[in-house]
Length: 424
Image (cartoon, rainbow, N blue to C red):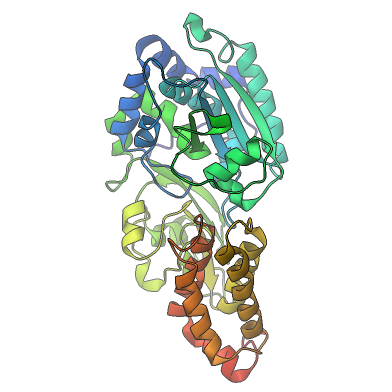
């Protein structure tokens, strides 16, 4: 089984320095792209590979790049931003790459910037990732010292500088236009789309924002080709995926596996199954902003299309497991507390609706709820759903709630009927 994304990550997680990275074949894709391919060739290879964004939305990467204006008269400068503001609760896959193989991200950014004509790149990193910041700074200095960054890379006409920006940190900075506002020193709120960042982005110039894992796939596609990348997967969704599992399992962690690996295999073979005395009840398959799946879904392949057909989302591919000793009401209450705190406050439904949802859940969790509160919660899952708010923050927050009301409704009703939490 090939694991191109994590092949260089050692058991002690100490990253390769630039000599080790080059000995392992690193920066070969930069040479291949800049000396033997045109930017259009790289774009075509990535498009043909079927690579989809690994940040949660799953949008085709080549198509996203194709929205950048091209040809004579296209606006300049252009920017490439690596979104490393990994704040989704339960998600830690990018941290593995940032800390374990920072040169792979840099190489991915160089090749991607070449394809879209960007001359400046930014790594937008959450402030809490201090070790990743330290290792990225070292790797950037090494790459610049070796001539992989800077003016006229490999003697070509292509130049690129990459800057590390440590974010003050807000969940909404995971949204690309809010991230761009934050990078410009403005309040981190989402922008109206259109215009999309590929046309009007950072400082009004064309900009592509890609997730860390997405960018780390690009060098391997250039080196090995689109068909190879498709062949890594078990399904029609190409490539490998860094999946994660947290919760009451024996071996929580993250693993690079073929796209389409089943939930059951992730839980039982890689995470070791449930801890002794705990029984599986459900799982948020792609981080905190996805819908619960339950036991009947355990054999579903974890890819974008299959999980969507089940009414949830692959999201970041990092699963949060709910066991039979954890109160689902308290779990959802905790998540909604987070989402209410992290609302940027830009639109009324999100700013006022999420705290109200949290209040209702707090009352039910404390044994002070009413049965009519369940109707109010159901109503808010619709009123804060897709198309009702400025961005996807509130709709994402509603996903665990709406699915909890579906799959664990007995627990909500028992809290109200018994006027206490039966798990305490």
